[in-house]
Length: 238
Image (cartoon, rainbow, N blue to C red; front, side, top):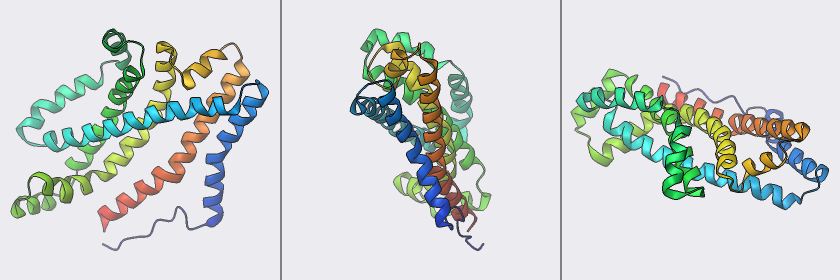
């Protein structure tokens, strides 16, 4: 089929507006810092600290999800493992926080572990869904070519699973932003959670901070994830 060009950024105005949307929350955070009289550098340190934790957890969750999907997306192993994974994803992840805290204390490692588990499941099951919906002739071609190991992963699993990976990433990162704030409040470590906890009695700052994060998530989705999603689907149809 003919590969159709992504139309998300054909308009330069559209691209500029999207970039401005990404910038807006940072402007809001600067205004907040001035209004509540805290150093701007301190506020952005909170944002950077939480963002770095989220990035580390997302990277770990993506690697684990790809490995598990490669091993269990089909066959006898999949029939046994997938229902088990489905049960595990329904376990409230925050119930694991006290257990993790016993081992590692109220630390950054505990928060990253919690985030990794939370983001793992939407990425994993989205990849599984993408792999299970592939054309039968593609799977037959892999068997005929006797692809296995790294070659199978590189030339089949990864290209076919990319749409699921992107879709799962959109969901996972949105859930990750929500979870990291709660986890940082519970563990009382530095980050956005500590910021929101410090100003929990100020509803204006709290509401504006949440709005800034939502606008940031929306902007990143529009700027990064949606183009990747459309490109991955276009590649699959070509």
